[in-house]
Length: 190
Image (cartoon, rainbow, N blue to C red; front, side, top):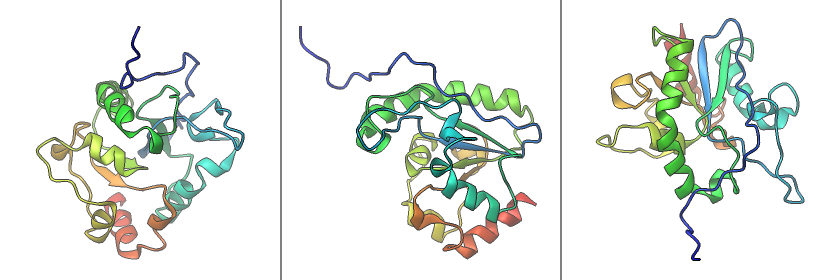
């Protein structure tokens, strides 16, 4: 029997729960929960990004949120792909993009149930999320171009039908380094 190398593989382990506060103002969207310790053993979390326990997975995002006047008391945190994968996203982009495409309808329904008016923006923690969610006919910008142009993606430009705001996890995209971008996002949130 031949293996299908492009077939996505997911473990049948209970995925982490989203973090859902009572006074939500925005969504934070991650890629998937997959992470490994230094010995290569997969880590499993109760909540996405291990919110409420190990702070290292959400620390950079939380720093950006704090810069904007937000915190864990007012952001709903979820992953695009909710199940664990065999490899981390950065080493699994093709499979992840396929699974993300299949997950968009579920995330849209979930977010629309939580915020039927469509008022809460979605902070994207990775450029891959931007690439997966942007409508096919829209030109893609690099992460740097998005931050330099201080661009907020309109609901009409993406498959979630909500405003999307880059809030990339990578340390190069801390809002403290991108003052103009952070100020534009702050203004948008007022």
